[in-house]
Structure formats: C-alpha cells, structure tokens
Amino acid sequence: MTSEDFIPAALRRLWGISESSRLGRPAVLDVNLVVAAAVKIADRDGLGGVTLPKVAKSLGFTGMSLYRYVGSKDELLTLMADSALGAPPAMDADDWREGLRGWAFAQRAVFRRRAWLTRVPTSGPPSGPNQIAWMEAALAILSRTRLDWAHKVGVLSLISGYVVQSVRQYSELAEGRSEGQGQADAEREYGRALARLVEPERFPETARLFSSTLFEAPPSDTPDAAIADADFSLGLELILDGVAVRIEGPDS
Image (cartoon, rainbow, N blue to C red; front, top):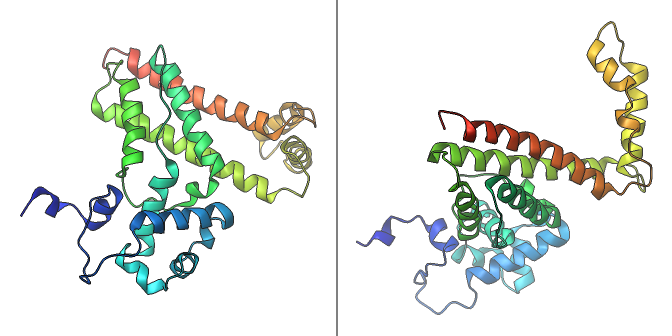
C-alpha cells in the first residue's frame, strides 16, 4: 500500500492522479474533457443547467458513461469549481494590506465573470490545486505579518467568504431589477419607498437612515460596476481594518 492509497477518489481526480480503468479497456474520454464540457454549459446556462445527461450528450456519450470519470454530480461540481477558478495572478505588493486587497479583487473578478461559482455548494475546505494556489498566494502575503496559522486561515476564510457573498448578492439584485433599471435608480426607489413606510416611533434609527441622502447620492447615470466597486471596497476596507488591529496588537 502506497501513500496515494489514502487519497480519496475525488481528490485523486482533482489533482490529476491517474487511475486504471475499472473496465480494463482504454478510456475514450478523460476527466478533464468532462469537466471542461460541464464548465462550458455552466458558463452558458448557469449552474442549474448542468446535469450529467446534458454533459454527456454534449460529448456524444450517455449519462451513465460519465460515472467512469466522476463519481457523482457533487464530485463533478467540486471538479468544476476548481477548474473554473483557475490559477491566481501574480501577487506583487509592498505590504500585506495592499496584497490582500489585490487578492480579494482578483478573486472577485473571477466570480463576477462566472457568477455560477458562487452557487456551488461548499462541501469542504479548499482542496483542489487551483484553490490551493489561491491559498498559497494569500498565505505568502500574510507571511509578512506576525499572525499565527489559525489567524491567517481565519483571515483567508473571512475575505473569501465576503467576496463570494458580495458577488452573489450583486448578481441576485441585478436579476431582481426591472429590465433596463440601473442600480442607482433601484436604490433611489428603495430609499424613497421605505422612507414612506418606516415609522420613526417604531424604528427610529432606520427612519433616520431612510430620511438621509444615502440612497439619493449616486447620479442616475452612474455605472452599476462603479457602485458595486465602491460598495465592495467599503466592506473590504472594514475587514482589513480589523485585520490590522489584530496584526498590530500585542497578542498577535
């Protein structure tokens, strides 16, 4: 028995460790072709459009034939997520804050191109080669700090979770808007409607919020991307402020 015998089948496929055919004949397909076909369908139809029969049909095979390459639909999603994420860009920053900011925006760019990635169920910690490459990039940035391993992992989890949630929320809000309506107009309508509904006696602070100019601020012609970038940056800087406190604290 070798060390590879302890690696689960899903991880073996993620890392490209070949397995001998259970049927004893040469394989016509391989797992990379199956995953690439599934990613192509997700890019076109969203995650809900990915089914094993549809992937198989796109490759000219039957649905059952894919079980020779992927053990289940869940395993296929895991393989797709790592493949679609891709490798991170080169990270070159003068300090940890600049580095983590660049890391977060780079990951956000991937998820915005492929919003379906934010809907892939999380079945465990990062385990694929591309996911580990992103982890390595962030850990290299944090190696310049005094944080211990637990705090470094916590920072990674917090920022990556924020990236996923913000992209998913942006995508869902965009889907819910009326056709042709921009984010600035939608926020303005929201603020004005709630200003009429929220009673100061019942919700005093919330009423003050809706009576402020916050939701009136962006001009109607402000691009949605600019508003989303500003919102994302605000939340990210708040997170990085917290990380800075821990890094600079005496118990770091």
